[in-house]
Image 1 (cartoon, rainbow, N blue to C red):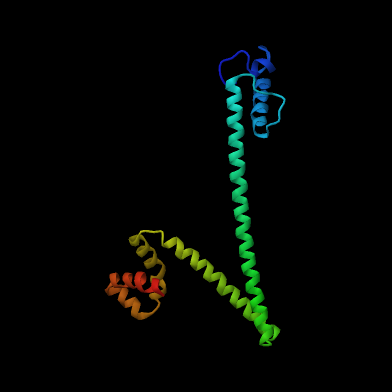
Image 2 (image 1 turned 135 degrees about the vertical axis):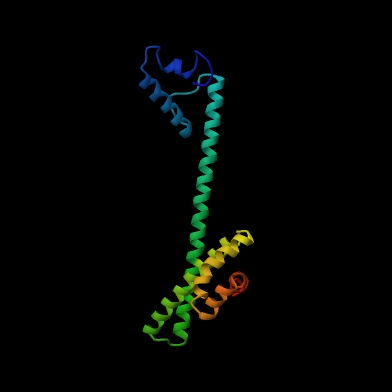
Length: 177
């Protein structure tokens, strides 16, 4: 119980010879009852009442935060679904207007979806990379791009003789493309 009172809910609902498990379950019942605001064990003094009010306020804040974040996620999903539907509708309209055959339309749809998914992934990656300090971004881009560029003999030679130039290319030029 909150406070040092012989008139609190512990004294009201238990006896001095009550076992630890009974007192523990009673305290757990009272604590859980604070979140639902309906209970048969109620505060008996000012300290318990203040604690009960704070517990209910905390539960209200946590619940509204949780509901708000779920609502926000649902709205984001809805926006993405609308965008996807608009994209699909425009694609179907194009196929219909230009009388594109079904097999070619399916191939186009698969290809365009793969490109779009890849662009979205790349866009997210670029946004994350922009958060890095420039020296760390240069390190990341060098490690990511050098194996691709080194497959060509010119860049392989450039890497061997002028590694700093290749680092600059990986950072400045490839980032602009």
